[in-house]
Length: 200
Image: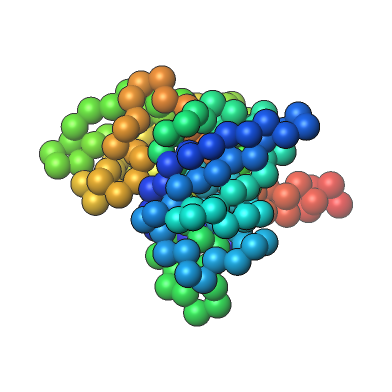
């Protein structure tokens, strides 16, 4: 479980195809790695991945075919910047919202403009995910916990403060950028509960 509060920005240091899927090595020099062990989970642009090797100031992960197909990982290249967050520990400060690290799908940035000192972004999502996105609700974009400001059909807007621009990869987003999306877990569970209730 994660909270969507990005701890550091890492960089793809190596990509190694292995038997049809992929092993990634991630330079995490800006992430405190002293308490990271083999088998721990780290969210990489919102994708919960398992540490399989510790490499210098970073770590390696194996990425399945499904993850390559359903997330932006398949487009990562050497030098790509990614958001990093270690899994929560009991007693940690809960600064964002409940994030599982299981990406629901990909979205696309369609517009960006300045809004005083902040930046406002408009994103388009797959139709099957749009129903889970509500004004003032939470959404995870590339692992970052964010608040939805406006919803119009399959598009929504977020407003990003300077601190988040400076400390995540969001500052590099431009129209056409693809992003990983995880909708609010509460919305998912409510839909399932209501469906079961209607069925009975």
